Length: 345
Image 1 (cartoon, rainbow, N blue to C red):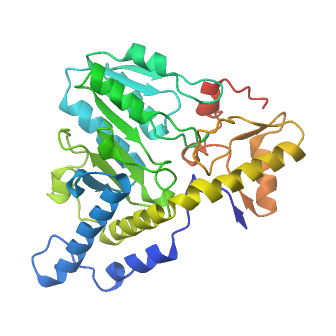
Image 2 (image 1 turned 30 degrees about the vertical axis):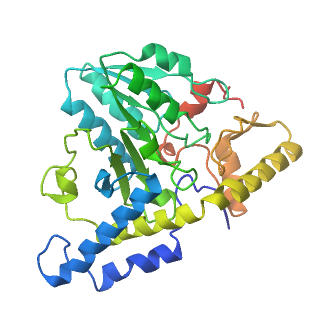
Image 3 (image 1 turned 180 degrees about the horizontal axis):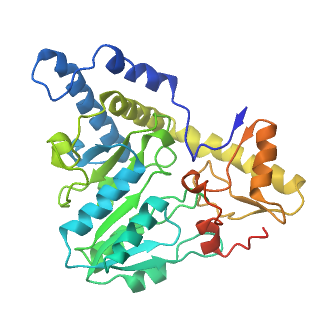
């Protein structure tokens, strides 16, 4: 089998599995309990939080909150910010965000919020001038992804954060970094990013664990109410094995980043070159250099993507024609539609 769908999910690294197994088999105590048996799980959570802090370049591990996935991180950030400040009812995002972001904002639109969706050009690059023209003093929140899950295009989130800080300092800035984690260096302490979300299964942790970075001065209402866990922001008994796994995966991803940025990019470029050379009417839907190193988006004129995927599956190649989160939909990719890609391509 040839697996080419690592933006959908990744295989759990054996070293990650080895690290988490003891907390499934013997060190299974509730980390909130007072007895000695609970000390090791509690310490493991603290250690994992430090590893994720280092992975994201945060100043303090207390700025890291564990979640179940990228979608929960996004919902916690968006709903937490907007529900804390109901006076400001203007939002800015892009037309190419993940459904976890776009569909959440559709719900806020139903509540009377005004949402501006910033467009992209034919290569998937963000229209920065349009963003600047839309930012207002009453903008409550800006959400822009770090890298697109379908095209791999990297967005200038540091530049955007700086612009928000200088022109509307009370506006909060959330970055969905699910497709950047493990593929690009992230260093939030040197940016004006207020909130940033990741998902472990995108970089060789199991499905079911993620994290949200929250700058200390940001106020949020919790998405899940209940106990004291995650300093009251995310109630529910901590999933110790998966949190441990996330910490280990973050540590390994940081160590492998140089390989990702060089060797994986070389393999991607070789694949694209081979397809364009040997397949009639093939085209790169985005060919810019400013992409995550593992992602290609290729169109084949007058051939249905689903048909290609079925043929690839028959010969043992796993690929996708868009986001895994919308694979059950018959609608064309909202990302390619925003780029103006004709659907004969």
